[in-house]
Length: 348
Ligand code: PMV
Image (cartoon, rainbow, N blue to C red; front, side, top):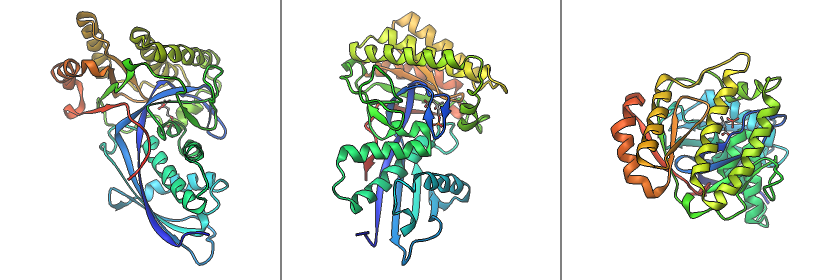
């Protein structure tokens, strides 16, 4: 029995990869396993209004509002997403949907909203699925929400749960799959509890390379095979690190992964540099600070110029002082966002 009409609101966060996903095969399957911290503050809130149609529509019937305004330029992406997921959610053409979405972080801040946006929508759709099929278990719901998110944007599948998730089949991670992300299935050492991520907004400019183009550049990339092997080795290392609490080795793996992601872009054809001079200045400052103070602060990068500054909660006051006195000067308009490890998608 399909419900006539109603409203569902959910939030879902962004995530930051520690071992990066860069390179995919059809349909949205990763060339290597990746692992990330789910974030807490940077998130999308999505309200899904559904109204049953008298007869099933030929096409996907929806209106889209972003921060209160109609957003026609986001529509093709959602249309495409519905096309991909319709065989897994048979009710899609039975409804007229209104999707209202907003982010806690500034639009075009260089923070990808696709992970939080796609996972929030997928999670809302799964809440409707649950109304139609109340027997679905919580575990099935979460897994299918991650599966659907992946079809919207690969890395989005890692946002449904927290605090650490793994996406991609890997022999050392029990229950891992290419089709959806799973929560890291071992106990994470308390050293990583409430780990902090301060995101320095170095450059808010439009991305020079979309992730779709970026992933494609790994086909025929001269270092592709070695990169996928390296990523796999880093997953094994990081598994042990997260269990043992070895922050020094954590720093080594995470910073190396950040550079490797950018090295792949710099050595593809066409080639790209997504870091800015200020990205490198910040990295140098972080290294100096670590050397002089013994701090365990480190950085990672996404496919852009912004720097994610990662550090244990126990160092929060000192590192925030360091960030405000030394690093904020390198941020565009002095902008940065304080975030930390979080728990994934929620009903509002
Ligand atoms: O989810 P996509 O297709 O936008 O790819 C994002 C890939 C990176 O953010 C650069 C790395 C990652 O694993 O999140």
